[in-house]
Each structure stands twice: as structure tokens, then as C-alpha cells.
Image (tube, rainbow, N blue to C red; front, top):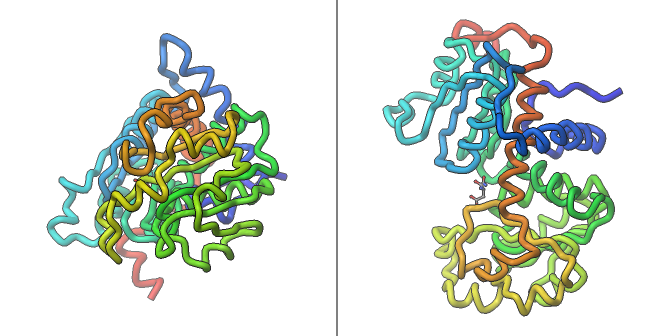
Length: 322
Ligand code: NCD
């Protein structure tokens, strides 16, 4: 029997069946977005807390829109305005939010493991919207939905991931997800961002230093945003990155015309990707955004609309952990 999800903290611990279940659950919501009236009453009376301790545009708007279209209300906490700036601890902030009785919480945080830490202490479903360099599970799910729609399967794909794999939670979640479906994964980028340890993330993961070799035979190419602030450790000039790793139309030809190009956004056009590739027929970037809504609606429907969970803990319970 399919094990019911209580939280969505990462892809690593999910089964192939649980992943397929979520992708299947997203199907009717994809249809729903084609309708002129985009509002359901499924989660009417429920409240979803959006706790974004790290800046975010598309992911936060996507979760907020998904909740609204299901009829739920949202409580918003944003990095710039949060009392974290005043020195409040993560736990005190989320206990404060929990005291306003939301039915689920979506959290983005710069520390890997923050959503799990919260999930162990709150009695409501927790959804990870990106934690440090650890995981970004909804991004991998929406990527998988996008690929499955275009390729009609997720099985045994040749997937190439380009860029700063080491610091990318998107890459990590995608590697876990696609590997569960037998993917052959090729990682390519500057050597400092593609260390050997990454090969042990899943079976059939290899590192390739030359982009031409990495693209040859790829079914799916995931281009990661270059985090320019990381180009100083050690120094890597943007011109050098462009020369060696930018996905250009010429390079895309090596992968073939059926290869899909994905990018989680925000894209830096002209750095990691040539604009004509970003806007070309093989690009899936806008489908990814639309599918993000369907995935997040399916998850909120499943987690927040589902059965009641454990009773809440609170500051008074903290002593019991010690
Ligand atoms: C990604 C993230 O924040 O991890 N963006 C996103 O959620 N779509 C990727 C990135 O910022 O590079």
C-alpha cells in the first residue's frame, strides 16, 4: 500500500510509487489551470503558513497561488520583514506562526535540514520549499512532471546537469528523483563545483569535464543558475564560464533535437544559457513554472486537506527533548 505522506522534506526518502502518485495527483490540476475560473473550495477554511526565511520570488508566489486556488488562506512571513532580523530563533518564529493555528507550513531556509528540524517539533504538515544546499523537492517534482509529459516516460533517461552541482539543492533533488527511475546522470561544470563525492549520491552518476561529451546523447539537460557570488571561491571569470560551460545552440545540437532543456530559474541569460536556447523550442522553462502550480496544489491538497496529524508541541514541550 502507498505510504501516506505526512510532510514533504526531501525526495531522497520517497519511493518511486510515492513520486508517481504525486505526479498523477497533479494531472487534474494541470487541466484545471486551463479553465477560465481558477478557484476551488477544497481547502476552504484552511490556512497555509508560508515561511520564507530566504528570498524567493517564483517559489513563494507559486505556493501562495496554489493555496489560493484551492480556497485556502495564507499567512506570509518574508525574510526582509521577519523578526529573525531582530535576532529571534527559527524555532521561536515558527512556534509563533503555529500559535496562529495554520494547517500546514511551507518553509524555505538557508540552513540544510531546517524543514526537518521544524517537522520534528510541530504538529502540522511541513513542506520544504528549499533548504540550504540540501533539497528542493517540489522543484524536482515539477521538473519530473514536465519531462514525463514531453517524453511520456521517466524511465531510464540520460540526464545531464550543468553548473554548480555542489551547492545546488535543485540538482540534488533531481538526482535523487530521476535515479529512482533508472536515470543515467552526467554532471558537468567547473571542477570545484563537481567534486567526486557527488558520484555516490545515486547509482549511475558520472562526472564529465568537457561539455561536448556531457551533452552527447542527453535526453534531458538541466541548466543551473550560476550563483555569481560563488565565482570568487576560487576565482572563476564569467567569460571563462561562458566559454567552457554555457549552453549554446551549437552545443545543444550535440544532444539532438528531442533533448529537453530545463532551468529552475531565475535564469541569467548570456551566462549559463544562451537566450536563443532559453527561448527555443526545446526549452521547457515556462512549462516548468505552470507545472509548479499543479504540483504544489496536489501536495497541499494531499498534505493539508488530509487527515489530522499529531498534537502540536510548543515552547512548553521543548524541555522534554533535552
Ligand atoms: C532555485 C532555488 O532557489 O533553489 N530557484 C527556484 O526555486 N526556482 C534555484 C536557484 O535559485 O538557483
